[in-house]
Length: 251
Length: 272
Image (cartoon, rainbow over all chains, first blue to last red; front, top):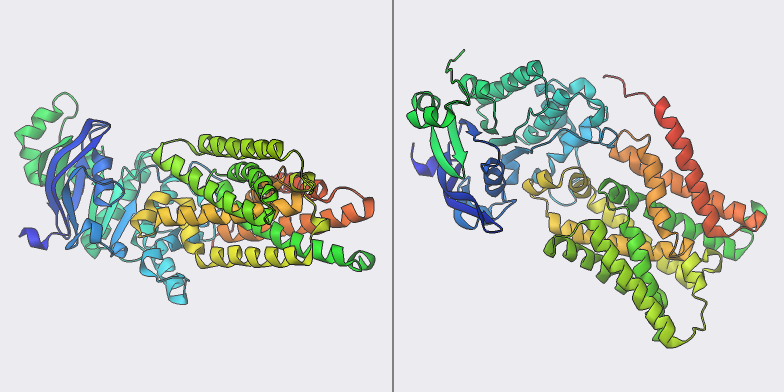
């Protein structure tokens, strides 16, 4: 596939913070339909890279092209979905209903003063249905379990039908069964609906089971390739030696 | 109630008090949820400097206080962004400087013809028709702006990072919210005075957050708490000859306690 057909193109991106080199010369592309797992040790720059791609941080050098547009000119935010790190609410009494949280995802589609229509209400119902939370839309978000909250945030991220969904360690603090169901739901969105997914994770089970592309980061991009290349890469084996026993399998 | 409303000064006080209290309460929901509750307190201190400057220069004290409060609110934002200070530190610096300016100006002037105590402790019963109109216009400007930017403010309050990636202009909205807060503080100063104005911003919102299940409910309950506090506070102060500002804030404190107790009885919304 040519570089022109990529959804996201990262070219020679570096990022320094207080003289510290957080990211150095990162280049890679993300293509439609990819399920890209972005892995690396703590402090390796994974979240920083995602925040640069999403325009939250400015790179020290290099460029990002989002859906054919330079990042600083990009306006089609409705085509991007994002579930940030620590999406689970720390304040259980925060007065936001599940419906209101999902409605926030529609903002990028709407023009000032961004009032919601009946069609929007139907989009909210549909998104909640897709993540299995339709019956809970009047609940306060803090009343949901950690796993249900994660699904509500996914519903918010997909309610406007984005092309690509970024997730930053979405299952931190969630039990193993809920994690499995959550990743199965992501895989379904990727395979059945063609949603491109970029997932920061430490969970090697997800990589081997669902991801078709893997990027391995530690200030520099050590590896970027397909799942099969990842499993057979000597670089990866050397990098993970002593930390993980990599078993690659597909269901 | 009939005898209370037969006085023109009470009609003005009720109208202005109700409108300003509700405006403060609605804006307060955003401030409390953003952990910016003390910005009202800080800006109120700054308005003391503004009022003193206005009195010294023979200009309308409320208008000078408004300009000083708006620039101070933007200054707090800049300090947070540029100097990397936490919000409470930035508020502490700006509010202390504003108060210091006020003290210096009072000292330079020797004395003022107008009683500064009126601004410190509020004097809603002495509000004149011109001030009622000014309050009405400013309160409507604040409320209409909140309605127009409601979805953005809600998203910004809940999750600023995701709001940014949805194309919400976070910095611009931060500035807008800071300006609205400054305007509201100056309005609230007339009702309860500089020393108690943050109570109008914080207590109704905090009371509402005890029981609200949604943003919509939070705004409605906060406005209701503020409205009841203003009407009950003014009525009690009229019949018992108590100070209006202290009575309004005391009633809102009582309502906070009631809703705090009610929280444990509120059940989750049923599944649909």
